[in-house]
Image (cartoon, rainbow, N blue to C red):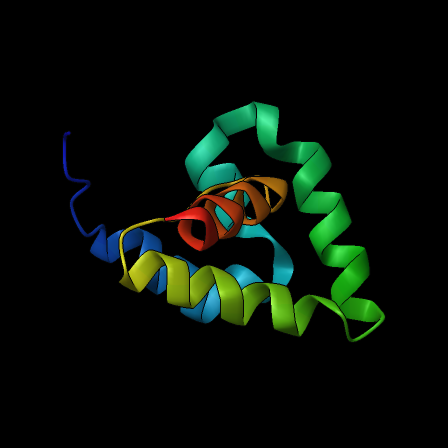
Length: 81
C-alpha cells in the first residue's frame, strides 16, 4: 500500500483559505467548483467550520479527501477493522 505524503501547501491553504473552499480548487482543479460553493455556503451557515477542521485533521494524518462523503467511508472502514 502506497503511503500518502504530507502536502504542506494543502495544509496552509486549508488553514488560511479553507474557510472559503479554496482547498477544493487546489485538489480538484476546475472540477472542484461545486464543492467550493457548497463549502462556502455552509461556512455562511456556521456548519462549514466543522468541515474545515475535519479537513485540517485529515490533512495532518495524510488522509485528505476533496469530497467529504469519502470521510464517512474512511470512518466506516476503520470501524470494521
